[in-house]
Length: 264
Ligand code: ADP
Ligand code: MG
Image (cartoon, rainbow, N blue to C red; front, side):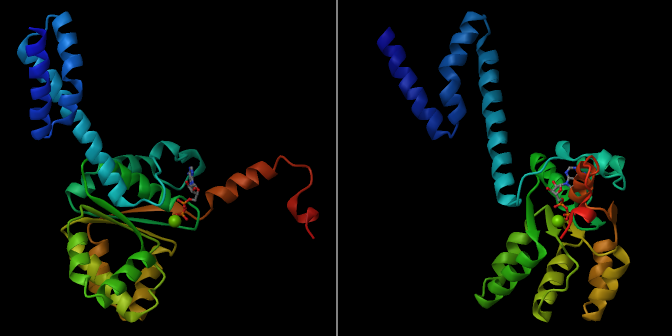
């Protein structure tokens, strides 16, 4: 009897592997013992195993999506201190975290001074979207422009654009400085206009919003592309004062000798 059992266990292992159910394979004996002890019937046992497989599968694919998104560093909203960022509209951020804008293929523009948490918030939005099954890719704008130019050089532009077209959410960090070359700028704006109404774009920029048009227009880039980005979008302002500078100032304010008199 024991021998037959051992044989069927081995065979079951093979079958579960062939069916690509690694978690069911790893867990079946343990769950079977537990179900036997707890008098769970056969269907209940099967249900438990299926649930384990599904949970593990979802975890692995979320991990893959997170990796594929290439965030410079993983930032979550939990580590964002809203009290230190009084200009940031918290309810608006929480609303965005529900990712409904991605469903609606709308855009988000994060505008504020350097060090005010734009990249942090954009990353947190991207990480959340990954967790909700969205395909996300984070680029610094300069990095994307370089890749587009290189791809064109190598006749791989079609391939790169096809990859970008598959995304649900494209994050463009640090837009505002006009790309070094006119060709680069045109490729970038082609990407943005292709995303229009097909996927969402989150853009961060140091430039005050009103200046965007000026800067880009001076490069004679089509106003239509910018219109597309700003049509159906949420604008989130992060203010002007750097989080780290503010924190440093708070620390310094406790000191007896101030930085100005102590200098030189
Ligand atoms: P920006 O992209 O606007 O230049 P970052 O998002 O890169 O700014 O922020 C600079 C650093 O300060 C990062 O390490 C970020 O995590 C941190 N930071 C900025 N704002 C906050 C905040 N309100 N709470 C916690 N950390 C913050
Ligand atoms: Mg940044």
